[in-house]
Image (cartoon, rainbow over all chains, first blue to last red; front, side):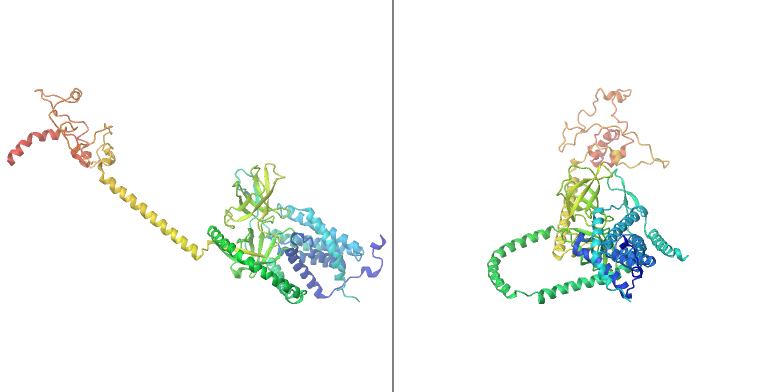
Length: 173
Length: 447
């Protein structure tokens, strides 16, 4: 339990990244997310823009940053769908805010913690989208929770590979 | 204030998006399903125009999608032709042996090919879907499990427009939704917001096709029917103004009961087109038939034959009408004269009252060679009266019999004058009786 709580300054420092990383990584996530289902078909159980949102929110430890990044990426995702703009946007906004808020309180370098967080945040994102679609928009949309669970699991596994790669791009003092 | 800065930013971001949702989303309209007596269903009306953010997203992502698509083909070509050349010499030897074997098989296959060509010609003859199409390549997807959308590399610059049908040679794929200059968004039939009118081929049951949560297309709002069996083909019904009628959609995979409405079933359809791995699609740009030269010639020939048949039919009717005129016996002499009579005008300029039509007893046709026994010929018994006639006739003081005068005759003389055969009228009228005594005078004068 002690290892989950930041006890020294290094754990509380804000990670910084080059500006191009903030541009390139989200864009790459969007492109790959739109391209991979062509190859994997319905087995593309992942949500790369959400993973990028979670990563930057956890490491920047700034709720504002996480909120705005989540909103931008989510709305870009919505732009590629036929649905209303804002469904993914609201979900990613909330996830970005929560991830940044949690990143302040716990150590996020642990792979197990990252996997659990990715899994939980992905499921929460699905729940928020269902809420927006069914309750706020009143659309008769059916949800397949098995697919959502698989997507959450896929995000958890991919995060184990993606997050260490993104860690290499951070600016070190 | 700075303490709540994070929360304020969060709420502001959420509020902006909620307002955006409220602006862009229309509440679905409750409309009745196409089943008589069926329940109302939600139908979302597609908006026109493209949202700016959607255009930005597509413009941002699609160039990379296009580049990835192009570069992946180039890399495949490079790998296959230059890098992956291991064991090429051995393969070359095997290929030469294979060529020798294939030459022998080629002779056998030539006959089969000729047969196949004939069958293909027959198949082309049966083709009814001669619509104008544009081939397009699939370059991306929506990337969201909640949205079954693909992007193609043709757009408004190529003549695409919203609501055009997208098909493959196997079956329908979806419809064009948003169109950008050089790409377009296609809503696939297994999306939950899609909709297409379909009909089951054997049972002729109509329904709406849309996707379910598992990404399978299903026909909804169908009353439970035992006749629907797996394997039945599903075709487009043609009533949605998007898909032409009769295009293959898929086959019935299974029938499941609607969880919310017990008396309804959902028919899960296995799509004819492989919706998971789409590479090339056809966009139907016009529902007007685009006929080939041969089809056009066939159509012209058909029209000419149809015109000749119509002319022959008109000629036959004309000949029949002429024949009818030349055959007087075909006309009914007992037909009521009132139908052809002109209205008689009185001296005061007012029309005379028409007497009630008296049913006329059937009269025999006039004889071609009348003799004294022919009816209507004034013979030796012309002046004789029957017992019945005496009731209507009057006798003078000398006891000589007067000619029988029908009561209605003077008023309906126009009918007699207008008749085509006045000579056939029986000579029992009063004018005829009066003219009889004058005849000797005239003849005497002439003589």
